[in-house]
Amino acid sequence: MTARSVLATPALHVEPGSVAVAQLTIRNTGSVVDHFHVQVLGDAARWATVTPETLPLFPDAEGVVSISFQPARVSAARAGATPFGVKVTSEVDPSDTSVE
Image (cartoon, rainbow, N blue to C red; front, top):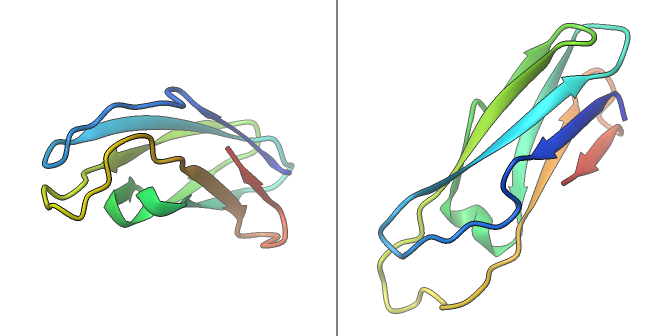
């Protein structure tokens, strides 16, 4: 992987109708300028917003994306833990991905 990603808070607590934010730091460990696309995986993806969704980085540079989780306040919202993953994909080489 031409990027190293670290999720600052791997576990969050959020009540339906509220917002919790996680920070993902991405470092370009490759030798070329690359754009990294970030996607939330799992059931929590439907409540998640990634800002920015694509992070351009020079070699050996790092940046941060914010992931906001805002579950709806509805009776269908399931109580308890909801596992999620964060997928980082290189634009230069789309087969180069990692999941945090």
